[in-house]
Length: 240
Length: 208
Image (cartoon, rainbow over all chains, first blue to last red; front, side, top):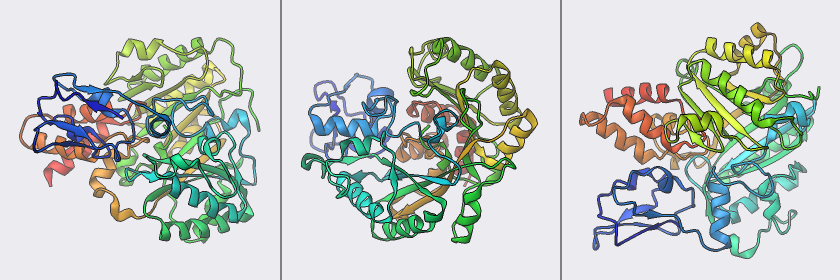
């Protein structure tokens, strides 16, 4: 966890609003700032940007569980399973050269805990179990899969189950014909979860610039944001 | 970058917000990847971005701009440029197409507008990542006007409390909306935070 050096801290409180998890507090007795260990997800924001007048904020990540927190919360860390910074994979960003998502397939990127609420590994495991019932094809390079002890049961190592992270992206794909089943399951998860999740839907774009999955999503009564990420096909060698 | 497509706000506001990401796939062996990224970064910087970022170094409000422009890894680079006008994006795409670097390019924005730009430049959308928004216990989220600002950092590094602090500092006359937006942008290490849009949104909150 991050430590606030109590000998240096002058209790000015400048650091407090910078924490996206509100994990920095002012101790009313000592009149100095401190970090609430359970809430800190090791995102590194305070260490990087707080203009502390006494340089009292010190990075101190010790142990496996805290390191895992950092891997899923600090965009500046690179997870060994992906080789890229952040908690996700290349996903559709390089689909023009990887062909990860083919025509007729629909990808999902479910970012659990995002934005700003956070999530435990126990809850991520429940999402995995529930989605397994639909029969999805998981993205094998995803850091979550790397950590799972048992994919079928959504089981992480015991020491991680209670750990909280900023968010985790579950990535998988299904044929277009199964999208309605995934949506049904996501609706159930939305009703039963104690956190939030952001839903991304990935599709190839047709030659006439139409997006096959949009019609289906609208038929299912879903609102599709006008804002999206588009891979413009400049990568080479191009996979058509 | 992970989730630049989950930004929220009015269509008018979002039409002044575009993120261009350039990425190397770890599954492709590029010749002189560092050189390609230097060239790509020059293209991004030439068209007046309101923010730029390099995942090896950081964003332009937190790190030295020369380092952002020049320091790259041998393999696995990701860079970003943020724009407020579709015309800028068109020019960036036109130059990237001409440079033929072979790197993957992703544009986040109102997708119908992005598609129009692609058509004009002679490119085709390959793959899209659509947003279906936020699901679950949304009552735990900060107010919408704060979320409009914080969701401009895809990794959620911009704290809602800092947004409120900046609003308070502007109201007291201690900070200008521009300086407050820049202070918020520092937390978004990737450099995808649109400082101009943040400035507009801060002014809107302060005026309420």
